[in-house]
Length: 290
Image (tube, rainbow, N blue to C red; front, side):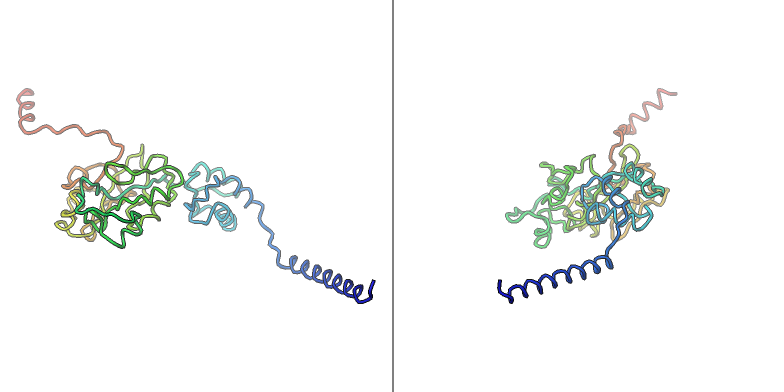
């Protein structure tokens, strides 16, 4: 064999060995020893990678929580409180209890309540339509009915109602927040599920004055403050002609629902109200009692 070839092989081998040694010492210098708890937490998580926890997947959530050494400010909406309690022994801390939440649609501008003023024939995606028009009903705040929120849901917890053209949130919603982020008009909101799934909220985000909002939707909030006046728990505020109910302060007394002149306040999972007797019926009852 030619001496030049042998010399080249020896040089290349020496360079390879030297590079390997250098890389070894560099790897030892900068190696990161990962806490084994991260693997334990990651394996216990549902693996949905929905981002509802606020992190880019379950692994990132596990790493952040283990490094923080606390469960405060961390919550997996898919697994809920039961999952978080199961993770507590791994981390050696107590898991804070969080009220279960669900997404709600703060709009009731169905095709019946917000009658279409024209026919739209084009791209139906909400993100496109919202930059082009206020919507066929004319409300610049209302639901556009494109269904991007439904498409964003990975848990089959939403569907589009063909009669109202509005999204409907099902009880199996895990409050992952995907639909909330997908809505370009910020109509969807996460709220506490409430005892026995009972919830009360204003199904409107129209910030226009009453007469203007009523022109485009018959059930819009008009900012009349009738709900504020009957609430004894300071749970309702009106800003920019729009009422908002603080679900943490609300006691579900339903008084606000009764006085709302436009039926903009929705009550969910309550028993049907007894029909109120008119004056004539009340008078007849009074006479019978006498």
